[in-house]
Amino acid sequence: MALRYYQREANQAVFDYWSETPGNPLVVSATGTGKSIMQASLTCDLIDGWSDLRIMNTTHVVELVEGNFKELVGLRPFAPTGIWAASLGRADRNAQVLFSQIQTVHDKAEQIGHVDVLQIDEAHLVPFKQATMYRRLIDALLGVNPDMKINGYTATDFRLDGGRLTEGDGKLFDKVVYDYGLRRGIDDGYLTPITSKPVGTKYDMTGVGRSMSEYKASDYREAVDTETLNKRVVEEVLDTEGHRRTALIFCRGVEHAGHIRDEFVRQGRRVELVHGGTPAGERRAIINKLKSGQIWGAVNDNILSTGTNIVRADLLVDLYRTMSASRYVQRAGRLTRVIWPPGFDPEAVEAEARRAAISGYLKPNGRYMDFAGNISEHGPVDMVQPRKPGSGSGEAPIKICPNCEEICHASVRQCHCCGHEFVFDEKPKFAERPTDAPILSSQEPEWRPVTDRRFDFHQGKAGKLDSVKVTYVCGMTGIKEWLCPAHEGRAKSQANRYWAMHGGRRPFPDTVMAWLERQNELLVTDAIAVKPNPSFKTNPWSVDDRKPGTERQHTNENEVPAANDNGIGHARWDELEVPF
Image (cartoon, rainbow, N blue to C red; front, top):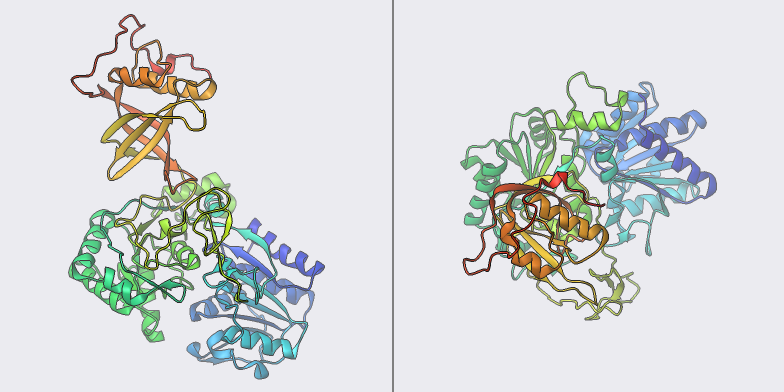
């Protein structure tokens, strides 16, 4: 099987790093981009180069243990490999290439013996603290072979309690040697795009406190797990996205998950519940039914955020707000696996053809329904930046200014760089309704119908010229753009083009007040094309294009009509010579 370019580059990056330093490299590759094949091919390269090497691959989820093992056997059917995982009933402890589940082998280093290379899948789950299963195993194996090399694979190189995996006291990994992110995977046509639209159901989160670096479970369930809210959530899901093929629903706790499952069943959908306490055989059966389409959805308590490969999943309903950026990114990644058309070979074509094949077949995108507000909490899934916690050495933790990104002490109330005022709340109060924030920082423009449009005077700051603030009402969302009739150059040209496109008369207005006085000359705007705005926290969407309607702008009856009646008439906007 031929590797994709980024998989070859990732393997080479590991070897290049090891040729220069004895440290522990980390490969970051988005969910669905083939980390299993990367590990398998690296293992083959190691055995080909050094035939007597002992290699161990370990992770926490039994499905990953089995999947990684099968990936290697697929490449090398007669590889000297085995499995040690109680959940699979295997204990091939003497295998040269050993695939293991950490829960089974964490205290078995003496029986495992000498290991030359330790590969860790889902490396973001390795804690910084020493008294853990991973750390006990690693320390014991290093006691047997102090020269053992370690390399990790993850879709998220950060975790809640320790910032980035390559930073801070107690870090296991020294450097990210290769990073293939979600945005690159989508652009290359190897991942399905993710989309998110605003939801209407309101969660009143007042009074939800924090405990152990996460929102307090009891407070959270009390706030969201009510019969009325559960019914409204399920109704909205089915009303807006009921046509989707397969759904993954994430809840906070087994009790909440059970109530949501029951509501889906009451409303006629085949949905089952899987959680951390579900017996292994039953869990496997539910996942298989989900993969085959025998059931429409699975409700879970975050157990499906890693280690599961549900290719047909095209809807994710997130009812679990988390302070962990890693959990958020891992969940969203469940939607990115691709369904290719029959007979289509993605490796034989370029990125544009792959993207076209995705958009034209069964799963053109995955919908992320953000009832919990995780996009507002962490930002677009392809631009998440982790919080930097305290080092645990007695120093107070730090925080990042949301305005200028300056690193500030956690106790300060004002950013020393830009003056931003921090809000101190022991019990955070969230917006009642999740905001219309984009799930990806870069997406193809999407058209939205406009139900109302308003022009307002916007005073320039710090000596800058005034402008026209345009507000479009699209459903429950107000989307803004600014036009500059009094400016020069490109800004003025854009304002003139807008005026001409919407049927305004010549001459073009050259001040903001002239624009406002003559706005009744303009046609309404029927629709706008929007793209994510990098400054999404203040204005989530930027306007990329507009479609004028056929009616004139409705204005106040007392407003004085435009005085000039000696213009050239309503010229076609695309016939005007507008400089760019």
